[in-house]
Length: 368
Image (cartoon, rainbow, N blue to C red; front, side):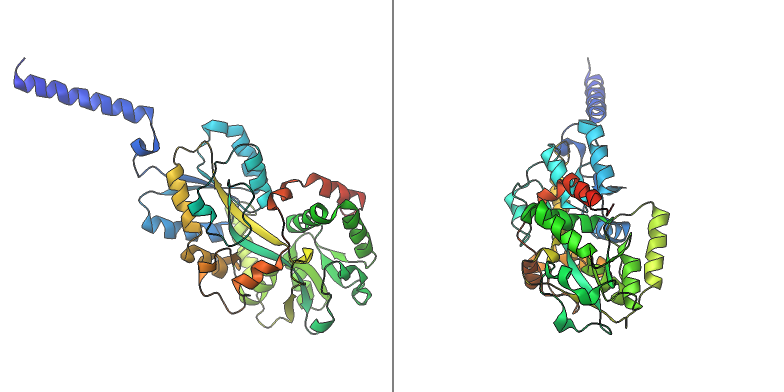
């Protein structure tokens, strides 16, 4: 066989082997840096897409996104199993992350990731906090003297001056998270007593927080149990951090919120005493899927979510608090990060996955 024939045969062999390897896939290193990272997100497009654009500017691979509510995504991951394309689960609630962790979907994260948040880290190392929201008592500044507000959410049940003038959202997930934390930390009997005494004050029930805060601004209510960012959004604008539905539905929701912005609204935020259940931090977070074939890329994206750039973007875009002390300067309307972190009670956030006893208690008390 002459040299030309030998060279041609070698080239053909190499080409065939290359095609076979490409068809078979292979490890993360063999797939090439351009293979997209797939993120399953319970966070909203208003937050996620802006961050992904910034990440892709500095990364050498694209990011594919699949949106859904946390429960929908957890169910999808269960059904897909090891065949899932998902590399990272970015959730709106720690309950969903706890479920994913408990069922073996998530892999352990390195210390280089876990030591970056200053608080709220789970006992296991399978997901990391990304941002935090806080439960608060919002109040109408024209009707209420802030010095007369209770120092604890437990004392609110005795505030007879607010009878018929309190708003709350029993059917909303963040209220149910708050109640689950109360039940887990203080027991079902104490939680049941609090609910019963609160109901004696004839609170107004709302299906979501935005109309409740608008009624508070209009003087229909004096106080309302809510999340801090609803007050921020009313006065300063910003998007919703939680994924709420399809793209068109999310766009309509953002338009409505923009139209309802009232910079001079007579609404302010009251924080209870440090460690009170009424200050519960509602933590968002993310974890890398055990079945991911691109865990290095997922860790790189996770590291970006904890960067100063991403943490500040979340604060400015959806009014959520950073979880890292390196986040830098925040808008003046925010509490300092260290102060905000001390507000919430010490709590194992993965316990928020145990929602069923809370829902049963609420049904027994006629709230659902």
